[in-house]
Image 1 (tube, helix red, strand yellow):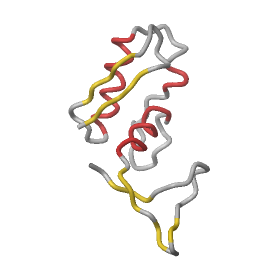
Image 2 (tube, rainbow, N blue to C red; image 1 turned 180 degrees about the vertical axis):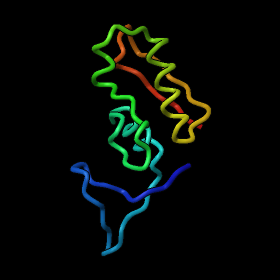
Image 3 (cartoon, rainbow, N blue to C red; image 1 turned 90 degrees about the vertical axis):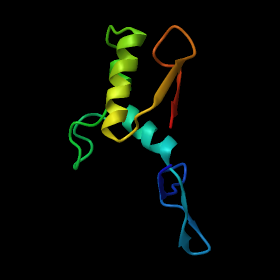
Image 4 (cartoon, rainbow, N blue to C red; image 1 turned 30 degrees about the vertical axis):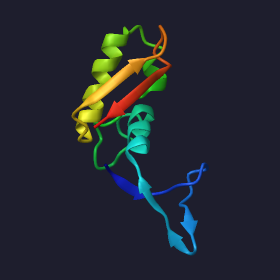
Length: 97
């Protein structure tokens, strides 16, 4: 389980009683990797799936799943399960351990 500074819905740092709030951040890490484009992360320029563009490509669920698992492995997620909730690439659930 990873922990990081909590953010508001607007992306600002969350404070409580004058202190930064720290929370579990696996879900946020995965979400950021799914949406980010290669080059978005200065320290890791090859990290990022760019799912928004990817879903417009002609790709099967298997190809999308493989690409997503590869990106998540770059951030240390080894056991990833992706469940598609329909026929398209836009509705899926990711479980990490």
